[in-house]
Image 1: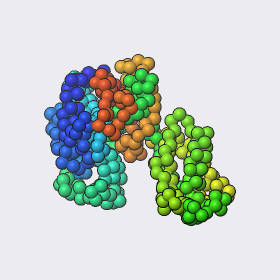
Image 2 (image 1 turned 180 degrees about the vertical axis):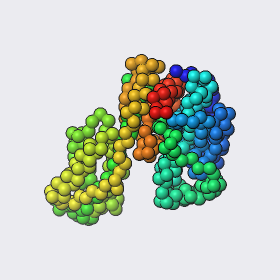
Image 3 (image 1 turned 180 degrees about the horizontal axis):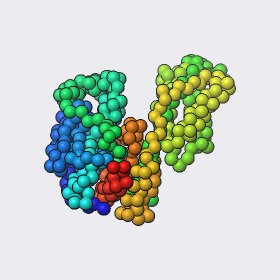
Image 4 (image 1 turned 30 degrees about the vertical axis):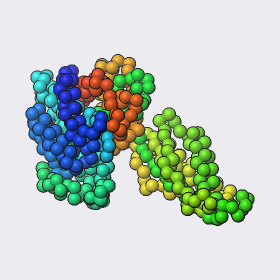
Length: 409
Ligand SMILES: [Zn+2]
């Protein structure tokens, strides 16, 4: 066991919150002035903790352990949504700093090697998980060409901040043995059952499918009902029938959303000739996602055969596959959770995306959740209880010590 300093942890979290503070939330999108100022402050805190700290060639704030031997990487992202909460990402970043710092201060653990990291642009201001992609060597030209809402390309944001020639920070398979990230749950599941820690087993996969309905545009007054090929009616019919079919295959962890529906031309006196519906669905089980996509395709074929409106579906490329956490790291988190929250933790999938979606293909990953008050996130009102924040960091610290204790030397 190693003792983290809860007061110092909270003070650092509030200091990070001040960069881009707005109302109760934070506006600190990646590569903004506030984001880069926060990264400069983070590296100064990492240096004070005894880490070799720098902002790397893509903007990650990194604190490299002075120790040799098997190294755990611990952190999260410090950029926010356009209007974000103060804990999303920030929590795990300050946990990484505090865990590395607490380990170096304790004579029993000061030999253990932990790098602290604050990834950049996890939140897709330009492209998703930019910092962790760079770390893993998989940042592509199409990522660098991605633009933010103002139209600036990622490559230009990196150049504007003079980052390109900074010291790189790359996955080193001779050092790094795993990545651990703590995060707020961003959902209501822990709070609902009164649990304090989630040992994350996986990050759900995501599929998005577009459905197009092709009928015949016509006059809404003169066209008799039995002669219509109304794309709008077909859309609503499809959505209702799909809801039934999804309910039959879904599990407790499945979610689906009809996020967008458009009728064309969208005028009250015109029978819609075309309609478009998007369905997105998420689950930790890739086979279940395929079953849901199959249901969508089967229903489209059936309705096209029934007529009079043609229905076609297009899946969004490959979607995002579910990400599995390392069984060993899940176990270390679970054991530490049982120590500090006996009987009040559970294994659970993450319904939101995180950097381990990238890193897990290159390094074993583990994640830990603490409860979000009212399950709210990506909003200024996002918050967690101070006791939960401190407990989560203590659980993470013990999981780190256990993982490094069992790592091959
Ligand atoms: Zn996040």
